[in-house]
Length: 101
Image (cartoon, rainbow, N blue to C red; front, side, top):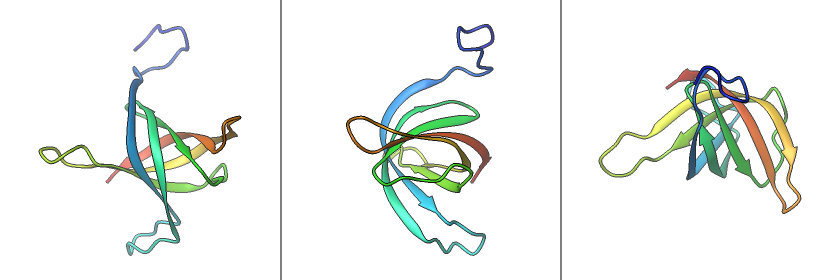
């Protein structure tokens, strides 16, 4: 939403949904590692995720969120812009969505 306090171009909505993060995704569908995650919030251009193991800034990942039986899953290629250790454990990732899959 333009003019918001944090100067974002798109409104961010709280999701708190179970998600998967695929690290090392390539065009052939092979991957190195799949992590369980929680999608904390989502916007048209980004997402905030909570994961247990650290993920490096600059890493290209795939975000997968199942939306239920009646809706298609959300699947997007993203880049990790921020990886911050949380006091309660795990890491919060700030991701830029680069392509919907």
